[in-house]
Structure formats: C-alpha cells, structure tokens
Length: 222
Image (tube, rainbow, N blue to C red; front, side, top):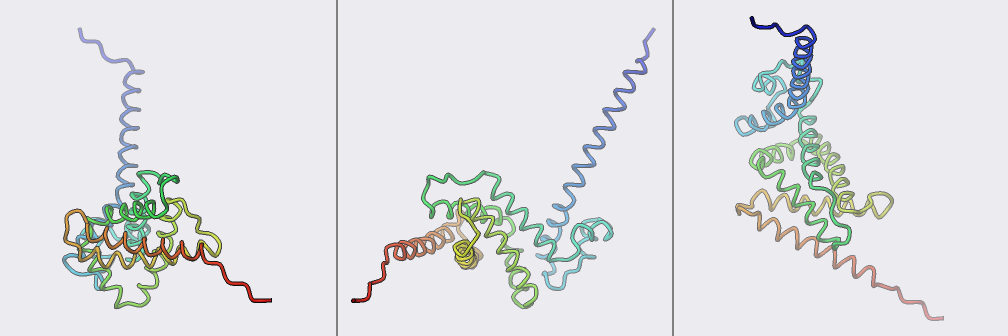
C-alpha cells in the first residue's frame, strides 16, 4: 500500500511552489524595464527615434501601455533608464585602483562605458542624430550626461564637488562627447580608433594640468 504524504509535507511543497512563483514574478518584474529598453532600441533601427511613440514601443514589447507608462512616462525616460544601465555596467567591475595614474583611471572607466554601449552603436547613432534636431531633447540629454560623467569621475576616484569638481565634470563631458563622435565611426573590432582618440585627449588635459601646477606668477618689482 502506497503511503500518502503527510499534510505537513504537502504544506511544505505548496509553500515552496508559492515562494518559487513569487521569486519568478519578481525576476519578471525586474526584467520588464530591460525588455522595454531593448525593444525601443530595436524599433529605432526600423523606424527611427523622433517619430517613435510610447504606444508603438509598448505594442512591440507586447505590453499594455498602462504597464509601460509608470516605468517610462516618456522616450527620454527610456534613454535615462538605458544610461542608468550603462552606469551600472561600468561600475560592475568595481572602482579603479587609486594608486594608478589619474589618466589611466579615467581612460579605463570611459572604455568600460564604450564596451557597454557597443552592442547599441547603430541605434545610438540614429538617436543622437534625431536629438540634434530637437533642442529640448538635446538639453535633457546633456543634463543626464552630466550625471553619468559625475558617476564616472567618482568611480575613478575624483571628487565632483566644489569648483574643481565642476571643472572636472565639464572637461570630462567635453572629452567624452568628442570620443563618441569618433566611436560612432570606429569600424575596428577592438575600438582602436576610439582608444587612440581618448588617450590623446586625456594626455592633453594631463599636460595642461601639469603646466598649471608648475606655473608660478612673477612678483612685481618693488
């Protein structure tokens, strides 16, 4: 005669199933923003960015707009979410060794960003072109860029507070924007052109900082 499992065992199995379903639900909820962002980038390749609507993105993602809107109430919010993801991937390898030269630390952190952006290069090129035609979108993008550059600086071991922090932030933003233009045209497998340009720009800043540190104003004759 086959013994039936006790009520306690059955209850334990039921609890385990409920816990497993709950965990799966949490994982699915966490994947939803990533799915929406990835869907939007696929659509960009087909339809461009400027004329793309949230409703079209929701339809392609097979999600109701009522589920997409609370997560991303605008297309700019989708770009912000994507940039947050890039920031997280950049920092996933940990902070740079503070004993290494400042130039090397910044170079490594910026190349981590380009590594994270690489799979989305074609779509990003289209988005950037469309944003240049929309001043408001461009201004929003610059604001988000500043936050990402602040994250990059802090991860590389540089403070972003005070006057020096502001100067660092503006300088790194200019270097990054110039590197993006090179990266979008870089057809090498290892991003050699991007690395060469980035290294050159950082070297110029390094030389300028060295000159400023060594500069001593002459005293007026008595």
